[in-house]
Image 1 (spheres, rainbow, N blue to C red):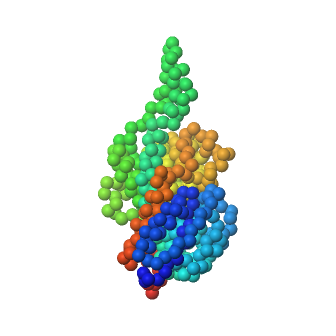
Image 2: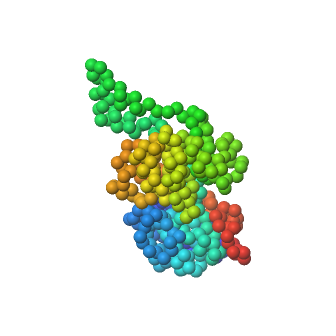
Image 3: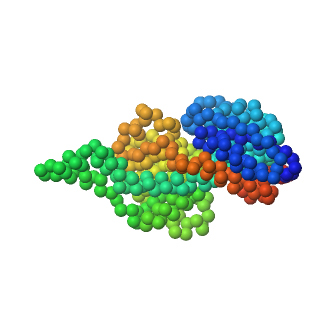
Length: 368
């Protein structure tokens, strides 16, 4: 890459990862180059649902905010594109005739058509691991809340029932004893997926004295040093006291967790999903919870988001529901931008491609 060549960057942020933070890291990435930056915000006015009805001409792009035409109108002269949730469709990539690099500060950059970028020889960079700690923390928190009946106990105290039950001539302990939870030592914690987040969840569960069982046919054997490798989902769901999902939102994973698997769980087992709603058969889980076939569940993601208020899930007392907040952290904007900068700097400062997500797919002959 010629440092004397003027680089034009288009930077697009939103309410979660601010354009200002993305502009700042772009300046650091391009330090030493002659450059100019154009920037704007996309408005997060719609839920990033898997069931969006908008036709943007590229059904491979999901979980986005804004419209591709906003990018198309400004990308013609851009060499570098930096985004968060803006939709980088094949049409955007085709309009960016001078693009040589795209950066997206998400780990699973499902709002970018990476295949189309690769076919045009455009280097793509993401922000892996930005949600590892907050997502793994919430996974373990969910396990603790489920296993110790924390939500129900909290409601019991706030409703005044504890005071009423104990301050009687003869105390009533009936509801109180229902809050008695499990001990976690030696319980079997099952993981579907041993990527960056799955590995961190496994470490934390193992640190609590739990036996960690993992199903991931793609993980290296070395990753299972302290864990038991399970060769089928059926075996995992049958054996474990907790099941937690940590696989990416690929088309091949849609409906991966089926009614059959929920039917194999122990009646004392708990299910946790902080990955994506479409990975599970949500109706089958609802049925299992309604019929008390499993002890409970905790969900941060749903097939349709936001979760419709008429969903049967909101009426159940054996499920914990949160609004897709697992990856949210107080320094989300600055932290996400910083990770992307770390991934892109070797490319611009040292002409390295080892941090490039799609380097193996770039057509031979593409040069820096």
